[in-house]
Length: 333
Ligand SMILES: NC(=O)c1ccc[n+]([C@@H]2O[C@H](COP(=O)([O-])OP(=O)(O)OC[C@H]3O[C@@H](n4cnc5c(N)ncnc54)[C@H](OP(=O)(O)O)[C@@H]3O)[C@@H](O)[C@H]2O)c1
Image 1 (tube, rainbow, N blue to C red):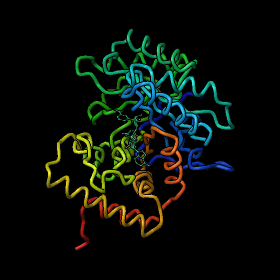
Image 2: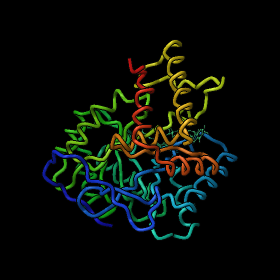
Image 3: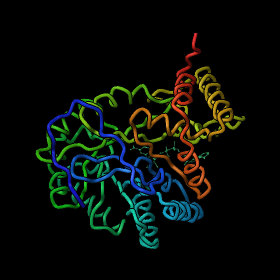
Image 4: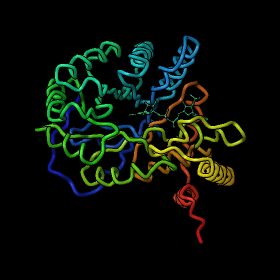
């Protein structure tokens, strides 16, 4: 595994996409730092594993298997997902699956409860055991803990990076101050990734972070890109959206705002139908247009197939601009 070193701060946009011969949307990537590693453009997140019973686990195993068969490379998990079950399922699936031409790109995360130096090392050791690997491509701090200074956590991560157990260091749910503080606490390594909640409807919090990351060459991974299925067409015909969808940018939408959001989502669906592309393709490719790397969830094999179809569709820039306008509620007047 190649490691990246801390470059001088950069003031320009992240490098352009690399495409390899025979690339599919899942195998295309973008440089991760300066060490030669490539970060895939689209990923599959394995958060929801923790919510379910044994039947769901069987379904999840087949979703991961389908993803591996179809060439998905970037898998995102965390020690807290299902208290380690998510990592274990992923490790089992990868070891049961013949490795294709492009090896999986694995991200996992240290919990916000394990940010003291000794805890970080123990957490990574546990994750690697569950995943059945010697190293991960990317290791993220899942979220800050105000009780533990980042000046303690970051050197511990850097030591694991120097040992080659982590291909790159990243963070998640970090604001601007925390990003600065974390970066300043590293000596040779650098923050390669910030994973944030970001989608067509949920962008207020992400936008300033995105700008900062662009300026400093930090890749942005966008989680919840489909707004839990709403941006793939779910909840648009009567089914009441769950609370997690009402909680945009950390504030609960009232009934009127929710009705407006659903109306805009229906307009996005109309646009997708008119342009003969899957609705999810608008959400995923709009994020790519913003420079973010979408990390979607799929809990059954059919959803993996639908995600692949959405990524393969690649709507025209004018269609994405129209989607942006609709999602913002800009009537063009
Ligand atoms: N760093 C963090 O704090 C953080 C937080 C949240 C997520 N994440 C990561 O990001 C990943 C993605 O997040 P997310 O699950 O919120 O993303 P999402 O892509 O917005 O939502 C995924 C959910 O949408 C539904 N869905 C998927 N495809 C669909 C389709 N074609 N039609 C209708 N519904 C569809 C499924 O719901 P059902 O399963 O109900 O069918 C699926 O679980 C997570 O797995 C995790 O790895 C990170």
